[in-house]
Length: 250
Image 1 (cartoon, rainbow, N blue to C red):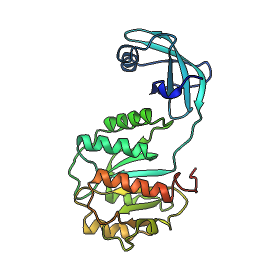
Image 2: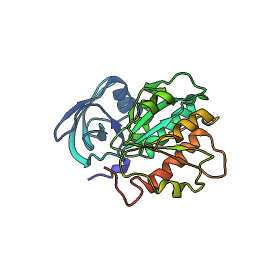
Image 3: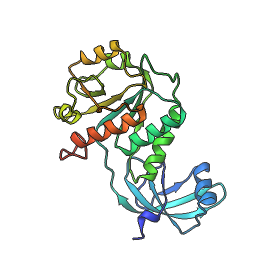
Image 4: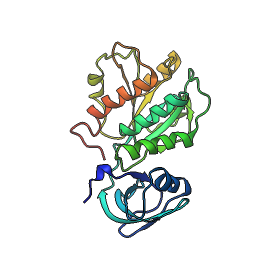
């Protein structure tokens, strides 16, 4: 088998299986043939979020089209832990960063949530998904998180499934040690909620703390930007509850 690390990889929607033929869309064909300058007979790795990763061979490479054949599965399908990442939308580049890092850190779903202090008023879901796909391509992931439509925090909490625990970052958390606070998390599905730059309002904090399924965690003595706080909190959750710990989540 060739050195897989040196073979480019792409996300596709098409089914992947032994001998399956895949035709790339115009943009991806342009990228493969004109930007990367790959030719017929050269390898490419493909994944679709369902069938694992496959080593494929380019059959035909033109300026506007490219077809491949799947030859060998190089990684099986494996879902990340059942972790939803809820976040107050940020603007432009910082939201791109947040989507990429949440994907790399193993979130299964990305869900924008509007709070009282959220500054951004709109979310480009296509851009959000494009950033998640790019992160998955670059980091050898075989899945891409689902991107859910935005909703208000009040509505999200009102419709919450109590079987899914909800962790939110709160600088006033009763337990200052985040690892200690996270030890009591249930082994079932989980969600992590990151607030806006100005933090949650008092009314929002009270509403969250009233729910039995909610766990408040502190991220220590330093004030972090929302995108940094997201990475820090995801690392803590994965270390205590997720697939960084000894307890593998299905």
